[in-house]
Length: 150
Image 1 (cartoon, rainbow, N blue to C red):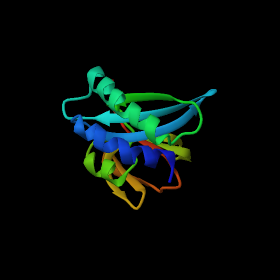
Image 2 (image 1 turned 90 degrees about the vertical axis):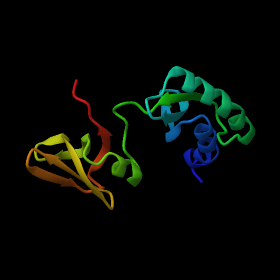
Image 3 (image 1 turned 45 degrees about the vertical axis):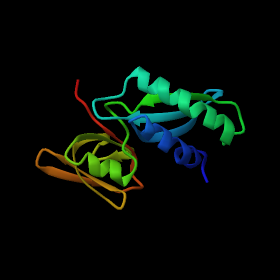
Image 4 (image 1 turned 60 degrees about the vertical axis):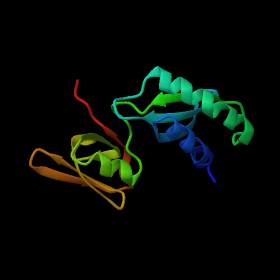
């Protein structure tokens, strides 16, 4: 079982007990340092107190379960307004929302496409750009995240 799946299995009930939802678990290397991040969400938004409380509750369980042999930094963060969509349930929840689709290589002259999320089916992402629909296959999509125009 992957580290992120292990951490999700024991962190999710703790996060939910604090009135939040576990959006994602990420274990990444940035420079010379490894980071384990829990991304959380809740109705009305997450604040620093939520992050701190969940960090304090999950930290001793991480020490006990010890799923990561090397040294790492542990962080609890908000999923954010421009959160990444990964699971089918994420796409279902945000149907009709504006998204940014990043591709591995350019299609239609661009590697990034912005539109309304219309459909997610077997990994394929369909967005509406004006009256036109664009569908991207799973092997072409590097990332899909919510998009907010500033």
